[in-house]
Length: 173
Image (cartoon, rainbow, N blue to C red; front, top):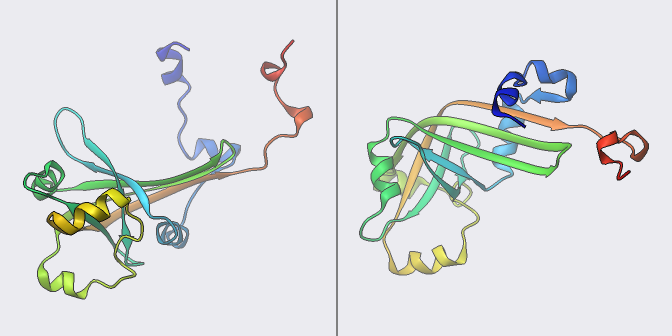
């Protein structure tokens, strides 16, 4: 499909509500963030953002928490320390008919020792790859907090079409 055609066919979320997409309210966003543990952190760099998958913890209100294994030289820690704003995307896509995503933006900073001491087990990231667990025992780790300034969520949850309703492009003949 030519790129010009793709641009021409873009629709807004509001225009896609006729096709089953809906905006998530604050309660649904909070529930989604509380029941997931992985997403993609976006930090500002030129010419493109620095994106990396991260596990996270959520305080149930307005803070996300990340454990950085920093070692001697950490690009994500350096970029986070310089960032005025960061973004984080959490998504789930079970099928092409059932998916949802939440995007948050806010300020990111390392936790002070006092804030770290106040962090509960429920707020700490619950899922981390074994590699990071092992590295965390011998390397320096720092907890970063993303204070959520803004969030939005969308979802699409419809019943898939019945076999007899499938499009002609699915017909092998």
